[in-house]
Length: 202
Ligand code: ZN
Image (cartoon, rainbow, N blue to C red; front, top):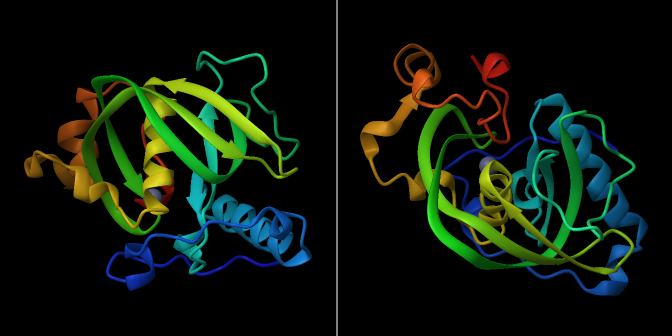
């Protein structure tokens, strides 16, 4: 187990579609080590999400922090590895996303693979995610608002897509310092930085 290097924008591994993970691989020791490494790397970087391609592993698994105020379904899985009181931390394997409400919901996003920047991205406000959990069980959950954005950001990584691809108004792509000075007040959600922490990254 180890903290891994986070690949940065420009690295080709961030731009390819990740491979699905066979069910039998989920119980393997190698896969457990990968998940541990992702957790450790995410925690060191103080992120609320990380996808395997970001540490150079082109496989369809991501760790996603979902805000607890998100409306949830009763069978939503809980993770024992949860460390942040504000978030439920989920391990999401082989996900499939279906848009439930296309009404755009905009947040300023950041990314461990795009350090020092923030960009305003609008995404569908409500989605359904079907995925496999760490026990190999099929799960379905619906997420909306910021949680839907976190999911879509992380799952985009599994398709080789970065949030900067989805910034439609390029005047809303900003360095951190300028974001805090000129743009921060446009968005009152203090948690709207995705897989990196804005103060730490400053
Ligand atoms: Zn990211």
